[in-house]
Length: 158
Image 1 (spheres, helix red, strand yellow):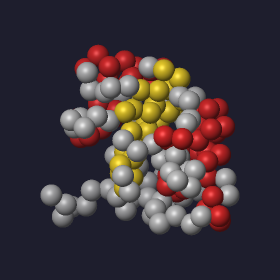
Image 2 (cartoon, rainbow, N blue to C red):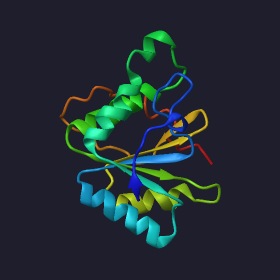
Image 3 (cartoon, rainbow, N blue to C red):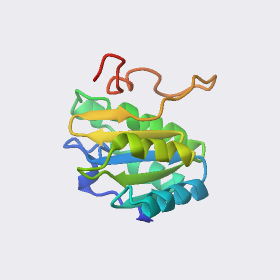
């Protein structure tokens, strides 16, 4: 596992965090994020992963939404996902960016992340962000509460 470094391959054309071909997962502690990376590496389930502390998430990822919503409107919900990531990072959650290979099974990766205590995971595909871990309803106020489950699998999907 390497440290997360934001570069242009992790952003959309409008500059918002959108690491196509990756899953960004969040964990309550740094140890859990590192354990997840080690477990995925040992199982051979991933090509590469990068760790992001809450501070790095706030400094690098969250800043990508800046004023881009006003300058170049988005047809997607990438800004909403960044705000959800910001909510979790502001409460001390740590991130793990996981590269997804062409032959990787996302369901297997999702199950592994859940086993390792991930509280959220977002799979960034071309033009679609899939919310891999459903969040139980909470009483805490979130900055984004609707619109980010549009890419989630629906009961009628095959």
